[in-house]
View 1 (cartoon, rainbow, N blue to C red):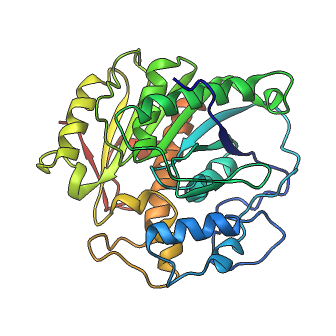
View 2 (tube, rainbow, N blue to C red):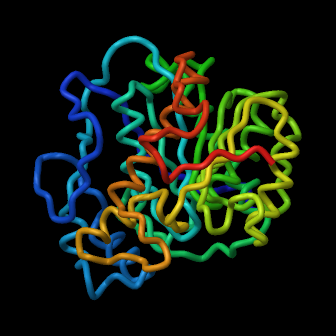
View 3 (cartoon, rainbow, N blue to C red):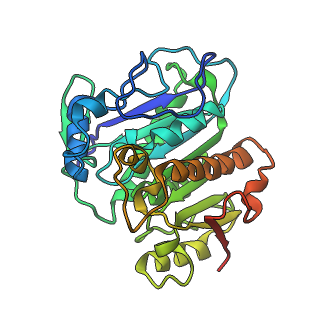
Length: 322
């Protein structure tokens, strides 16, 4: 077994001059940090089949509402870890990460070695996709998460003084979501979690949770109770094992990628999945609002009635209690 594994993460926190919610826009220019490096952008576009519609130069020229070296606000803040879907770069969770940072969280978005189409590591080396997609991936990612928490809480580093170690959460898209459940079961420091349209495979999210809260947020087509799909069956098993506060939400007209940045970027070029017509803008709003509400409720102690049931303002979102 190889005990040496490389991990890269982007960390963000609210600063005095924060721009607030995300403004990811293809080709937008500013002094802010790049969305992706050029080689990463090319690898992602090639992998997704978007290379003919969006150029790597344009995507790498996109700027986000983050600036390297900015000094965060004082005090201690809750920490949220985010894990992307398999093959996807950590940048594809930028919209959610920036929303959480704007709400006052320290946010760390992970890239897992050889599990994306291409990730540039310090020193300029780009690691390609090599890892197989197996049932072991969530456990490996859970170990990555615990390692990263250790590093961020290390008092010799710069983040320990701004993180409240009693308030840590984790969420993810696709297999990053199931990895969040495994990480919670194995690491009691993670107090709340979210799975955005990820399966569970052999994961038992109930084992070791000890009543901690968990959110399931997924597509109506595949994840709602009674959908009759393998995806639905996995969630039924997971739901039964969750022994604390829990919510099962399904989003109408959404697709698997509706819970990351891909529809936001693709929508600007008119790239719409006919099987998932929910706009990227609306999908991003739903993801930000409900995942943000989860962590606000359970890491900050805020009321967040959005999680109590259906609302007229969000007709796409249905609540299920099978």
